[in-house]
Image (cartoon, rainbow, N blue to C red):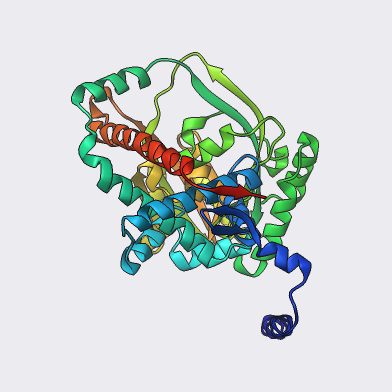
Amino acid sequence: MRSLTRMISALALGATLALPMTAAAQGLFSAQITVNGTAITGYEIEQRKLLLQAFNTPGDLDKVAREQLLDEALKEQIFSRAGLQITAESLEAELTAFAGRAELDLERFVEMLSQFGVDRDTFVTFVRRNVTWRDYIRSRYSDRVSVTDADVDAALSTSGGTGASIQVLLSEIILPAPPEFAEAAMEEAQNIAQIKSFDVFSSAAEQLSAAQSRGDGGRLSWTAIDNYPPAIGALLLELEPGDVTAPIPIENGIVLFQMRGVREVTEKLPTPVSLEYAALYLAGGKTEEGLRAAADVTARVDTCDDLYTVARDLAPEQLERSTLALSEIPQDVAIELAKLDVNEVSTNLTRADGKTLVYLMLCNRNFAAPEEIDREAVRAELLSQRLSGYADGLLENERASSTIVER
C-alpha cells in the first residue's frame, strides 16, 4: 500500500511539474521576508513552525519562526563574509549529537521529525546555521571574555541553597506508539494537545492512556520540577493551568502532560545530581502476560537489591542497574523516574517495539554536597552568557544596517 501511495504521489508530482503552479503554490514559495535581497519563503516559515512544534516550543509559532529565520539570515550573511563554513564531517557529527540528546540515532530522529511533516533539509539547515554562528562567535570574541574565580563564587552565592522550590501538579497520558501505529498515535496525540478541559483530558486518559495513572484519570501528585529533565521542566513551566504539552515522543509511545497547578514551597530542596535506578526487562510487553509477570515481581521485592534475587535465573542482560546524571538518562526513563519515590516502580515503558515490559524502580536520588559543585560547569555557563552579549550586539548592528522587508 505504501509503495502504491508513493507511486501515486510521484505521478501527481510529475503532473504538477508539467502544469503552471497554482496561486496557492506560488504563494507558498514566494518571499515573505527579504533580508538584503535574500528571500525567506512561506515554505521555509511553515517548515520552521513544524520544527518548533516538534521541539515543543511554546508561544506564537508563526512569530517565533519568522524571528528565527530573519535572525539566521542576518547571521548567515555575517559568517559568510568571514568565509566561515562548517565541514560536512563536522556537520554530520553535530546532527548526530543533536539527535543523541533525545536518546535517538540520527536516522530515527529524522524519521520522528518527518512524522511532524519536517523535511530533513529543514533540520540540517537549522543545525548548520546555529552551529556555524556559535563557532564564529567563539573564534571572534573568546579572547575578550574571561571568568574569574570571584565571578564563579558570586554566581554560586546567588543560586544555591536559599529561596523557594517549585512543584507542579500534572495529569498525564501515555499513548502506545509501536512503529506500525506511530502515525495514527501522533495524530491522536495532536488532537489531545488541543484539550483545555481538565475533565476531558481525564476522560481521555481513562480511555486511551497506557500509564498506571489511567485509573485516576491520569492525575499525578505534586512533584518537584527539578525531578524532571531540564528540557521537560522548562516546557512544563511555560504552561498555564489547563494547557497541554505538545506530543513528546518516547520509545514505542507518546507522552502528553496537562498542567493542573504550580506552587512554591518555602524550603529550597536540593536538585538531584544523579539517579540510581534498576530496569528489569520482562517478556510480553503490556499484555496480560507481561503485566502478570510484573505483578509477580512486585509481590517479591521491596528494594532494588531484591531484584537480584528475582533475576538470579534470568539472562544477565535482563537486569540493568545504573547511576547516571539526569542529563544522561534516556528521556522516557527520566520522565518516569521523576514521578517515583525511592523504591517505587513504574511499568509504563516498553522496549523491542512493545514486546518487552520495562519494570523500572528508583533506587536513590543523589544530591550534591556544597563541596561537590562543578565550578567548571558554572564557569562555562558564565562564559557562554558573556559571549551571548557580544553575539546579540553584533546581530543588532547587522540588523540596523540591513534592508529588511516583511509581508
